[in-house]
Image (cartoon, rainbow, N blue to C red; front, side, top):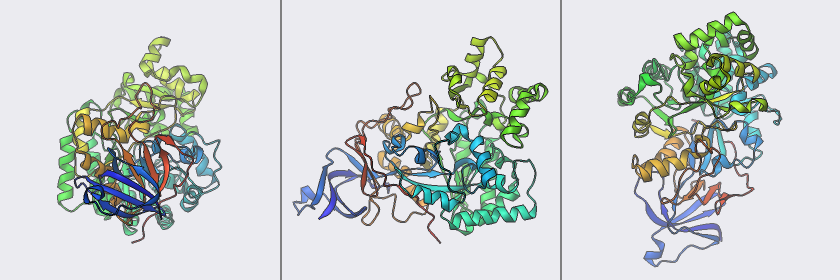
Length: 536
């Protein structure tokens, strides 16, 4: 007898086709049969050791988070309800060009310091790996949901070149190509970049193109956080499209937004650019989160010249009055490249988390609000936070536009990604609410997408980008990574005021045929494993 039958579900299978009624049978972690309209047909209904009555519920493939920052959270927190409760069954890690493999001892310490604001320093983690394969093996010891990994180009550059703003030598470029090839052979699905983050931002296009040639040859894809989402955003997108085409490498545009006042209402220009490339044969996808504010670290706003050399050099510059004044000028007058070429507006920068609990009074306020309370200039407040929190401060950046968000999510290349940073007292609610917000707010309430379209963008389309042959659809023989949700009530519980509230209307989530959410509660199951690149 099979393990489980889900009876009378409204199956939205991920293909974009209309929903249908069916009994779905699961055994040994896979979908073994789908009996359509079983009750109405009066046929013999499948039996199993356990049955779930899915009357009124939609059964869909599990959601794939194409842009996650759970690199340490999956190891630190086996519960991982932030994603499991949303119906996420697979996350893509190693984003924005910075993560924890491949490294040596020096680089690991530097990276831990550099992205403390994303993942914490990791005092509670045993960093017993150095290679991509070693990190994936660590995930295979048991995690809440599945995870794929992108080789982080900034980490590779830190390992080979360091944190200096200079071109790689031919020997260094050869070594970086070798590291990328090794990471792909060990199971990575592609390469990421953070081209407004050090040290990845110091790479010229020629260097990135050579790395992407390696990625394309292995069947992986390139996922850049490109050089600007503000001033020059369209040029930055065009740069990535041209680079990927030159390298013959598929392109996936990370958190594809058009932000800041200079880009209000300009999403159609971006979409026209992408349509021209797609129509000419380019292989392009993108992901977005369904919110207007962004989220990053306060240190990320600094100009690239101030970030050269790594975290200790940054702190030294911030404590030198003359250099700090130059940084302030770039931030407030010129518009630093770290702030996407736009002069910073301190009233849009909300502190969402600090590494030092003694700085908790700043959380939930904008930099300008805290500065006004202290009777000082906003830069003085920001500088104090950067130094005292040793660059570990996270922020929300309220610079997005709803009309751009809606236009981009309608595009044919669109997929979903949370870009969820789980650290901080008041993290961005996208970490806990992205996928139910798509289904509840943008499908049911606003009708921006149909339910079938939306599910396809969250399941089969990302699975195709990841080249996964047996995920992303409700099909016989496919893995039983599935979610049951109520289309009438599904909604994000997380808000900006209460960002860690779990969603409603998602009573069951299965990973590899095992319940991680059952009757709306997290089980103790850890069925997730690494999902490795499918060889060509």
